[in-house]
Image (tube, rainbow, N blue to C red; front, side, top):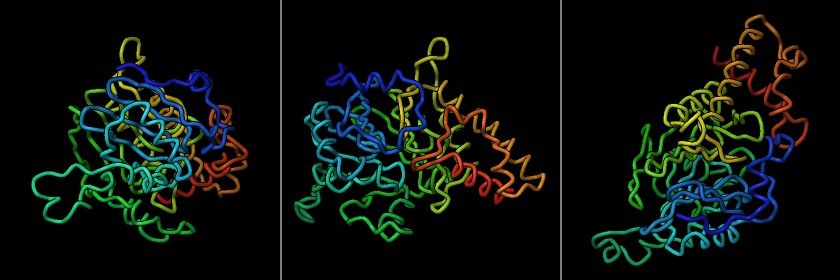
Length: 323
């Protein structure tokens, strides 16, 4: 399939070094489209990265971006396909990934079969099916800390409580894996098997250290387990480049080698942090020792949503609690 729409600033972004100083939800006000491979595209600029799979049966999204970017996301999707939006898969609960559920979901239509519509009315086909781990529905449907409950139209309509959920759409097998206690307690990894693309949400980002939402079940070891899971299902091509492509929650398009580097960083820091905790360091002593200083130029930041200080504090508390 050919790329329908590529904007030059996106190409510069993809080839640029990692930029940890950039705000996590920064966007230019425009949504850019990149054809990854097979039937899969990547949308950038609407908050979290959005994955689009398009074919004869319709359109499937992984995540829906920020609510205020929904119109631009819909316009970008229409440069790829004019088919109905059938599915939205939420990788986790955060509004930079689920905010567009309501408007984008309402613009789609559910696939119905048999006499479903005749039995329960035409509303059966209204709106795309929203798929997520059960934990996402549990959190999005009620006030969660300072975050109010989302409108009911934004709630997942098809949840799963098992380790994996399978889907066959547009001639392609799609595996949805639950990755517990990683970035949050409701993370999903989505693997498009024929296109050979994995969409991983915020378990893996290229713009900062890993984000562990401890208030919503996120843990250091869970993120590391998630990274190892991604590596297990990705296969590189020649000279360890290309092959299976990985769409992160934020940042540039990656392959297995990028995830391996990030996993290795997390493993080295995990062992270093645990050693310091075992020596009885307090949180203040731990931070003062600057244990991540060799990686800070790549992933650290002293401003924005997720600073180095917040990463160190979350890591210390998670690893100490995990013993």
